[in-house]
Image 1 (cartoon, rainbow, N blue to C red):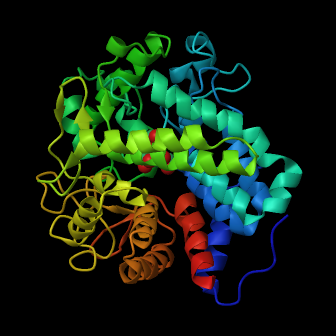
Image 2 (tube, rainbow, N blue to C red):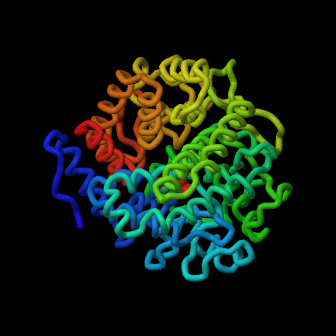
Length: 444
Ligand code: 2M8
């Protein structure tokens, strides 16, 4: 099933190492982010993983996405974790017996055959499906890949634009910090401070057995994560506007939502359907994103606390992610490019890779989860954003640094943004997958 035609210009250490990681983390229908820390299937991880896998085996990349979409709920949501029943309950917290999806999510349309979480993650999936298709359009057409995934991807996007539009202006809200994918970002501190934490003794954190405890979120943060998830579960995972205690419009999440709407337009056209609905929606969402989240004073997009009714005054790498989008005004892209290279993120200067959070921010910590370290998926997105907006030299330099850091760190989950020193777990799947994607780009 695996392709043998490895382009000759690829760095063989990076390529072989990344292929080994992805092979070791493959479970037969999907890929775990990490054998130790994250032993199930994660939603946005699988999107990034499929983007890399397409260069090794387009069919395996298709299966990665189809396994995830096979756990989609009837209301359209794609759950952030699809649990592997063969993995012991104690291996990861919150486990399936916490989420109780098939029972508590029954009314919302949770599947009966598989247990999942009830929250979501950033919608990279239509982007991934389109890239996977393009890796081998003939094989994809032969398997009917796009025809099968298109209706599911449309339902997923509509869940977000219709059921999660709590601000009433068209952007999707996240209802839990984990939904951002940037779990412990300082952006969530103000809205989280309103949440009464669950008692620490009421749950057992498995992450501390595998990760470095001082890098991981605190027990206080975890208590709040648990309380929010319990509340959502106990409401039957219903998305009533006033049923949530945490609702935030995150620029990173919404940038991927818009990028996926553009990808749906491409997919519709490839299937001979009318792409115009998707194009119009992508343009409307971009206009709203600019109107609602852009901050010229801060030089990037800010998250909006929907319940608190105000922007969150923190600079996160999520605020740079709209760089992946077409159709931004020239002054916005030039400001974003300046911000990425300036004192707050230091790209091309103080830092080797873009940190997850403002270098000058009060909560900056180069080691702590999503509060400073650099992540490969975020930097891969920014590399594409730089390229899209003509900053080719900077994109090339970022790509080279990413490849060096991935190999030197043993395909780490994340790295110190100044030194590239490995942090978190090793043999991490999206780090390996995106390495392969960048190598393929070099070879082209
Ligand atoms: C991290 O999130 C999980 C919860 O979903 C955790 O900390 O236990 C985040 O880095 C997230 O972005 C990622 O998808 C997940 C699995 O790699 O791990």
